[in-house]
Length: 210
Image (tube, rainbow, N blue to C red):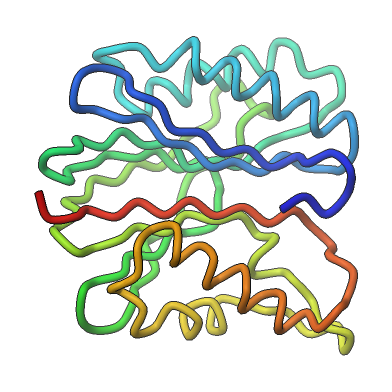
């Protein structure tokens, strides 16, 4: 959901080889046309760089090098980029200074994954975080941008990480699509008509029973 006419958020998911899907959620600094163009370039670079055999960390490093070389607007992008094996739920994802994803188990409390890494497009030698995760049957990984947690109500209060966790508590039975819609509805109810200050993007990855 874009806050203005043009969004600086990006999300994508596409097969990189049989049985493996690459997914990404990113957030470009700034607003408007410049951020939108930077977002489009970033997505194109990811698609061109995520080839069979490359791990998420290498993809981030290569995309970062190209963004740094052509970044006249002095923008940057935070990002979570991962590759998941669809048959097993095993995934590895790289962290580029982005909000920590949430792991939602079939029972029990959702848990925030560790954050890490630096944004892309600023330093050629930027260091990125890396995580490995075995998504078990019934588990969901929710990746989002800070437009969710930094959404404000008319009193200028932030939605925040605690409210996000509360919104998905006990919702593990929902499909990936329903879970994303649940969060969007919770944010809209909290905002209570206040003008959005940032784009809102969510990507939910659920390992269903085969």
